[in-house]
Length: 114
Image (cartoon, rainbow, N blue to C red; front, side, top):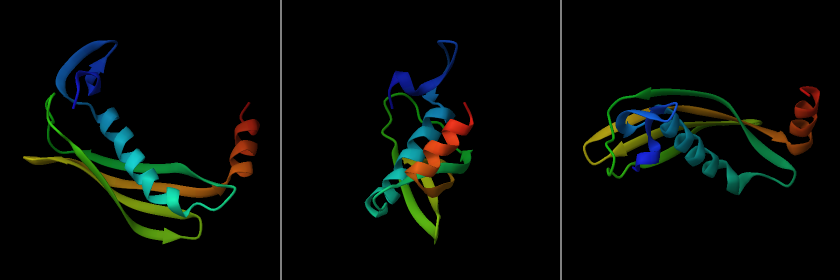
């Protein structure tokens, strides 16, 4: 855990610990790594929901390990249990849901929002 990952607002550090926003970023990343080997040509994953509880601090310098495990797989959706932990505690845990869509569907939806 580095200083850039701490709880900060407007460039001012609030706590010298892993921020919730950084924890969520890495939880989504490990969840994405679950689906990557299984995406078919023309498919992509899109984050649909994340529910997280921040349970314990992770001070600067602490090594935090992030893991994801697929708990439910449907035709167009993958649900993962995600966790962040270090040697003394579970830092955070939750659920990350990804929709599996055609890349063209994603592009079309983005264009609709312009």
